[in-house]
Amino acid sequence: MTTPPGPPVPPAGEHPPAVEGCVRHPDRATGLRCTRCGRPACPECLREASVGYQCVDCVADGHRGMRQAVTVAGAVVRRTPLVVPVLILLNVAVFAWTAVQAGSIADNSASPLFSRWALWPPAVAGGQWWRVMTSGFLHIGPVHLALNMIALWVLGRDLEMILGRLRFLAVYLVSLLGGSAAVFLLGDTRVPVAGASGAVFGLMGATAVAVVRLRLDPRSTLAVIGVNVVLSVVVPNVSLLGHLGGLVVGAVAAVGMVYAPASRRALVQSGVLVGLLVVVLVVFVLRDASFGGMECFEVDNEPYCVRTD
Image (cartoon, rainbow, N blue to C red):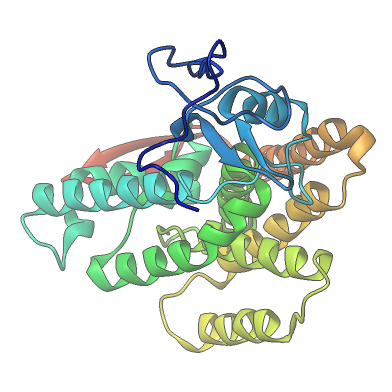
């Protein structure tokens, strides 16, 4: 037997079934259908599913009905950090500004901005409260800047993914204030302090808490913290108080972030942050009273304070 060449010809009086057009592209004829809704769809509009292929509309509907994955802190899972690179850019920009003012990269601390922003307890007591925050964005020389920014990048990337952007920023800033509070309370009143180290140590403490919460091995993280604390003692001109203050406050803040019960997560997390801020403010107020009346001014870009009481 032989068959004639070409496609089969339907018997006389019968017509081949019409090929439908894609529901999203009516001009495209297709014999494919979505396994979920049964509508015709071209290959471009189909996505592989667990069983067969679904159209893009059904895939989108399915995603809307799914619960979004969150971390132990309640943060939406993201792949790229945003707050960390912004903080690094801010620190680098401030350093560049001080270097231009001072006319020197190595001696940027001679700039007027550095003098007005550094954490100097008598000046803070004299009413210059901005120093407790602005000092965390100053650095003395490029090596100081590089070490802190590398640590911020290494620690901050993963921690921002765990905590989420707003929670991470809150932990960073409250750690910065914790380091400033420790210096203001117990530090040498004759020596100005600057650097993001207090906030970076806060990230170390927060990372250790997150590692324990995730049931990972904390030994390497604790070893890094231990080494840095020792270096803070051994290396001259390093603010041990600022580091320890940031470390403790950052760890406490992280406990509130990652151990808050899901049912009351927002309330507990905000409550812990507010509580830490209250403690820090009390430290500043109590210590400020011990300075008595102070009036601060600048002479040749150097801060000076005198008692007025």
